[in-house]
Image 1 (cartoon, rainbow, N blue to C red):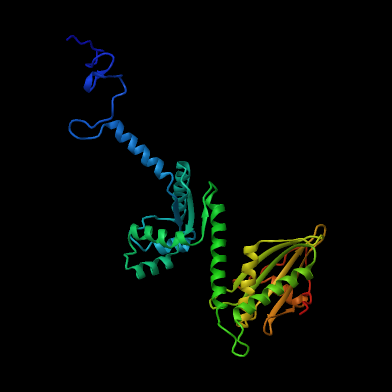
Image 2 (image 1 turned 90 degrees about the vertical axis):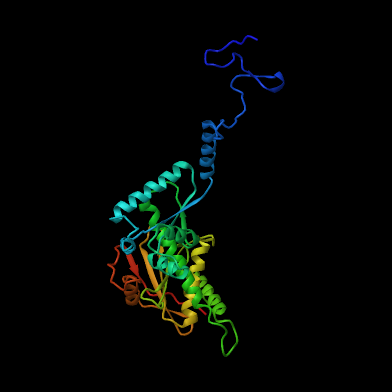
Length: 329
């Protein structure tokens, strides 16, 4: 039987399969080569499929945000970065690469002290990339994270640090509220303190009246820095009140921690109204959960002192310092 060829060593018009059925050229089934290996185009399809799957796997990048944290990790030989600035540029490049692939990426904080404790508890060698990866997956990824959406690290990291500090403050303050029941009345101390703190916040907002209000509650903690909570509220003439629920919860929790532990905390209120100078007032927490108004001089001293460091802060222009308003019980 005569055969014609397309010039490339194969029958023109296709080839015959079993039973005499003709299969058009370019439609042959994908089979293995005679040596058992998969054909190259099949391998390319599998690589492409893996790439598509990789884009559906979320990622977490744990960052050494501060120079001190970076310096602490330089003690490990397997951590090969020489300076913090170069490290941060590489991290940002990695984040952009993940974003270009369509990978959902979260950024967390890498805590060298927490990492050392994790390795000791898990009996891991801390001087390996594998241990750092496991810490990121099991600890950092379970903590405070911020989604990367293409923003510069210089804008993302302050937000991440602030949210991590708020979470740590909430955990510490909440632990102070687990003091059990009152010996004399049997009431849950933490629950009663939180109810008292909520009522005090409501009275402060009512006394402040309409305007935008910025409240700061500070309570001494067991460490060198106090517990600090910040709350921004907006009260309108029609009686509507706008505030963040998470921030209000943190504020009341910190204030309640001061009440429950009978610590000498305080509250500072800064009010803003259009066309007027800002007004700052303050109260001192004492006597079993009462907020006593501060004098003008005490308000000035409290507002012009850094709550975390105790260092003096220059007074702001255009701000009036006033005595705290009475809060009726």
